[in-house]
Length: 252
Image 1 (cartoon, helix red, strand yellow):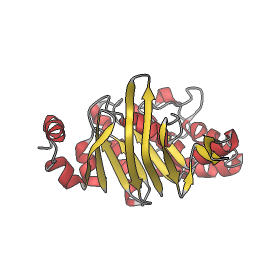
Image 2 (tube, rainbow, N blue to C red):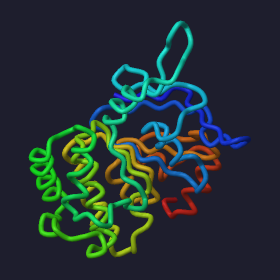
Image 3 (tube, helix red, strand yellow):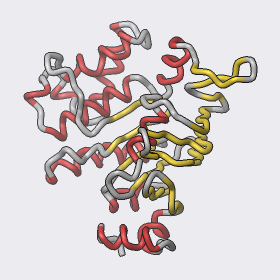
């Protein structure tokens, strides 16, 4: 479904993502782990076209995204094409990014309407359905400041689901939460995985990654240094860098 081929992203002299290749199969869960500053979030943002890549290519269902070849040269796609391509992806951020003056239901229904994804009636019906899915139908008329952090993140997940993306991207979705609120967000994500959602998750929740992921990818210094089944990567890494990292997070 999704293919990254030699993707690179530089910020001046910093090679935040350095020649990364990765294949994502439909219906799979891929967890990306690694130390802070290893390029995990930047890689995720290149998939969602929030960061323009400096090298390599990204393909979604066989179509290059973000760029096209014209007269033998690779050039950025038009804004209209970029908008269409980004609708394939739903992004859930560390910090919920909800509109404070909108209710939970409004936060979920406004984006599909603004992007032309749905009219108001259809967006409301979808909004009610996805709020039910994340266990917040009873909070649909509450504003963000009336919700806990975990509830706000679940609204953010519902907002992503309401856009009916083909791939869900999660950027450390529990890192801004108090420890007792983490489980409710991970529970929603587990349920999505069980329903067959295609997900790429940047996370530091190793037990969750072991339970849910089809593949765990470890990054360090902008590169993938290990990848494979969770049981192998988390408990039997082969590189010294990976051994040191997983020992530090308690999986070894």
